[in-house]
Image (cartoon, rainbow, N blue to C red; front, side, top):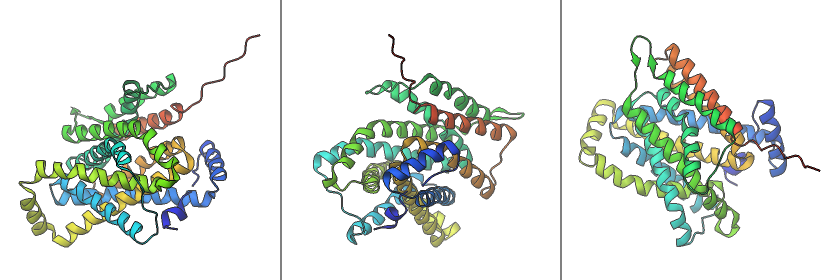
Length: 346
């Protein structure tokens, strides 16, 4: 079995979460050790992706191109896995692929929006704004059928999320100081991610449920990766086609072609790998535990990016991001809380 299957399984640290993960591990036949390895690989891959993505974006101002190139790396990886027999090839009909197209489009916008946000602003700022994703998910859940009404506590948790991000945008002596472009693209990524989750739930569940289609979590992500790429290419042509060669030549002259290609390739590799590990982890333990750990992951990325790229973190930024991330943590737990059973009346 491929590495992803070997590592497919992991529990976390907090006691309440650990109990759920242990139960999930027992149910799926996965050991806690394997689940821990999967989380470590997910966190490491995500952190390295953000580092190499920022390096690539700093070298070449063609961010749609960078986003497309990253997807190509994942496509090559998937083809190798299928060609060598390490992973079964998807067995999809035209109707299956058609059903996946809207999800792939949202994946394209979510990925490109994140790349553009981090290319135009600080990685830490983009991650703080992306902590607002539950706000978009909550709104999408109420507007897009089937309607998904969360517990009131979950909606209450949106207040510290929005307030925390707002506080992080206030600079002492300057008032509100926002990189509008980075904020806009990160928000677009949040909206697309929320729509992807809403539109993709029933489709991916049906595909995974039919064993003849060979659509485990890894293949679901691989197929979405291909569709996402086909939507990204037209944007590269429209937004950057006329200046791409000039930008490439300038980047190679200033930084060297080897360094440029290496950073793009590594960012693409880690993007694909961390997403595959995240998909596999979610399949093992469920969305709640995955959401909780995804929140903790943002803290690591903010700290690492701030140190590596010397991104200033003011007092308001630190406090605001902490409030927003705590709110996201609370939303992840509250949104999945089961309603208390009604007492029977005699």
